[in-house]
Image (cartoon, rainbow, N blue to C red; front, side, top):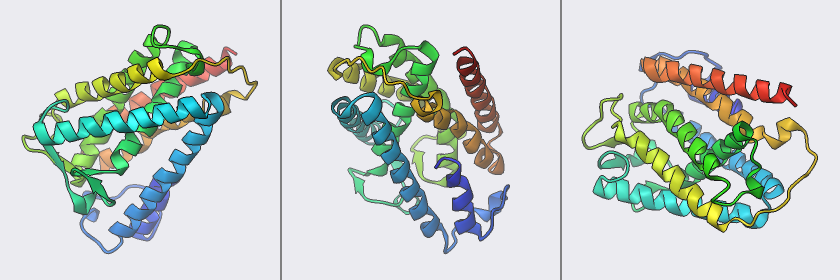
Length: 266
């Protein structure tokens, strides 16, 4: 699903599987909305897989708790951030023409969905790093999972937000120093993840989930998370966002190396 996103999107947008587009090719065109609808469909399908994965390794009760907490907290934080300038480094607003889909209080409903999906993938990768099984932790025992996931998402946002700002999906009233993104925004990402997971680990009911499943199935969200920065690096370079592009490639390389080492140590 992650690999199909850039390929299919490009094919619909440009009519071919162009590998590297020029910045002037990303203007308004009749295929933009069609490509965006496909992107939304891909996100929904990918989210469905994460729900299925979570139902297996967390149980439906805990997975539902995670989804509700993640969507609620991220929505509240987005509303507070956009309306009052708190949390994410200043006031910002989404541009409806560049963010298809319904909105609530000026926030596209797809955004909280993406928040919860990214946090789940990051949490799965943190489980890989620490060796802690998420379904067996509480707030006291899972604190390292919370911190690691917050750091992972904060680094990922250093790649994703500059792209979104350059695409015109949203912008800050006072543009920040990192390609239009305020530096405090990244701390806001870290803090949002910490709040979501702190609440979640106080609600989760630990279970002794000892299913004997292949490594790549158990950590399939980690594989998606590890590939995502490299995929996002391409539009960074296309748009002249060199530092986020470098971060994306380096971050993906580091994540993949750690995953391979963990797999080899089994």
